[in-house]
Length: 369
Image: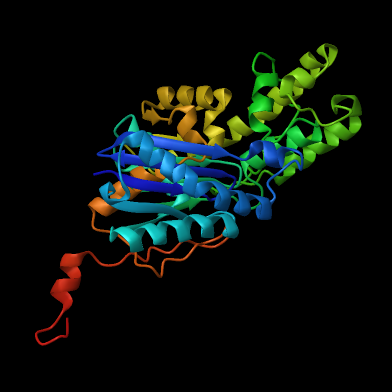
């Protein structure tokens, strides 16, 4: 029987069924159009939309799979990090299903699930080095096993994806901006030295892209003709033909700066983690073609395997939650109905219940129950 995955950490409502590493069915409802007019996600709108769509989406998912709620073997739900109101919608729905079906519940670290998603298409050789690159996080992990992650480096302020989104907003491109930046810069040649490689003059594995955001904002301020007169609604097509080449070169320079910064820090992590058998790059920004090429070149040069999920599994989705849940439940890890949501900025505890055999062994003769 498949494991159900529920993803509501931001502005995507995702539900998926995974059985033995194979996707049985999946459904995803995006809110991009709702938030694009604001240039970013509005938390209150996001949570209300999750609440509106999650039940009909679940019913459609079961119809697609030809299953009933009782046919689910377990329920995995993203518990964080994310927008608290959005996470609570998914968590409440998951708990309702658990109460109705009696199936086990497991809360999933959304960031770990991104990295484990690579295992849906290729086997991850542990221990592995994981680079997570998304709108809210840029983290490096030592991945000891599917259930053991050690944080090596983290975002100190702004993540790589935030730099892309901010750049798009400054140019009056639609939200989410990453794909529009890539579309405009795909065939452009970067301008050497236009933007710095941020936060490399140190010996740590942390990231900071706030300075790069500022450098890009100052450049646009000095070149205001690169800003569209009004918010574009159709991305690259909104850019007048005479400006496309110039904007493309500037955005390509930004992309190169981000990709090279990530490469340098990742190589630094590999130098300190020589036992890594492969490298995993995941998260929304991992769909960026330049980053993929940069990491592939570095991995080939160093002779280490590289796993990157297909683009559809790089963005937020429920398939990765269901797959991570299947791996954790297989190890006997689960939660009870006291499971809580963890918003962005707070550490996610590993507060799993002990496996049933451990709980049984810990009971003393004469214990009640």
